[in-house]
Image (cartoon, rainbow, N blue to C red; front, top):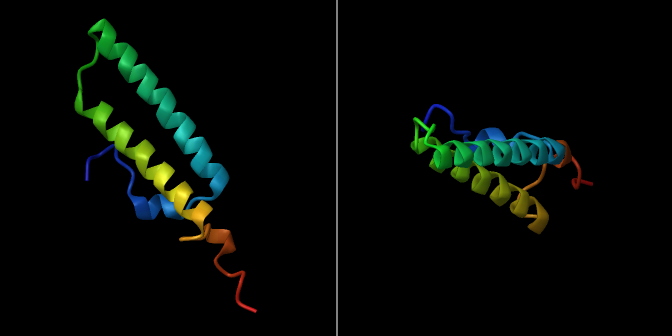
Length: 81
């Protein structure tokens, strides 16, 4: 995997609030990269793709939790009664 990329397993260990923070940071980085691209200052075009994939990965994990396909790490112990 690329150096700046985030593994899905690592993201699954984060809480919902941390995921929201990560997606916000990634979107901000994507905005800055697009700005650099438009002004001709971007050196690494590959980074745009990596950040977009990270955002998609985070949204996928958030959606899995929403549908109940996976649980947040602090909720994993609950439910067993």
